Length: 252
Ligand code: ATP
Ligand code: MG
Image (cartoon, rainbow, N blue to C red):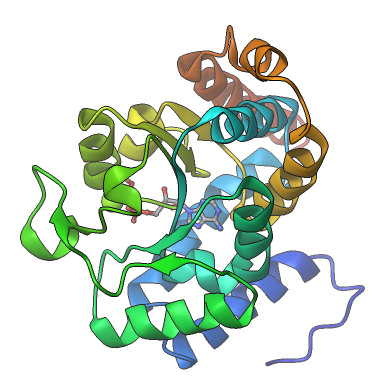
């Protein structure tokens, strides 16, 4: 990895890039994943590279939904594994939610590598290497899923997902929680709860919340979910970005 001085003004962003480049070299992330990260970074820049109050609220709602779920599952792609494997496993453990590897650019080798990485970070149950179902409405390779994992889940957390697949999961009747920095994407619009935040910030936040909320009675968790509107959350993210642009405009 390139040595990045901690006092560099773009330290965190650069470290994240290094993690992803390492992910590609290790056969965890795809080349296309680098480009996806670039699109995310652009929106993160507009957001001010911080977790906004509305994102924090969506993270809380998401954790409550996962705790209320009968069969919560965490879907993991190459970028999520490269950027947040440890936190994914911690969340999986606290929420008692298995993990399924789910790749847009699927190769069996990459699935195996990601599954091995997740297991080395402490994930006990990792599905995805032996899919036995197809998600309706998607082409064969992208439709692959596991009955004990995503296919049979009632709530799926997808830190980074493609719009088509997000829509297909919602059509199956699942509650989908997406983490996506782009409030305009199809994923963000189709999901039940969209967290407009960087995966590297959202995952540790959610682990801390899960630990705190785990002992809460169901009615308190339901109260946390009540009144949440995904449209409003997306509008708040857009307003936040527009305000930052206007602030910058005034200073030019
Ligand atoms: P969609 O398929 O939902 O219409 P898209 O095709 O524009 O969106 P994809 O290439 O499918 O986008 O996926 C990349 C998405 O992931 C982008 O919307 C980007 O904002 C988001 N993203 C990339 N990196 C991160 C990250 N580190 N944290 C959160 N979101 C990210
Ligand atoms: Mg897409």
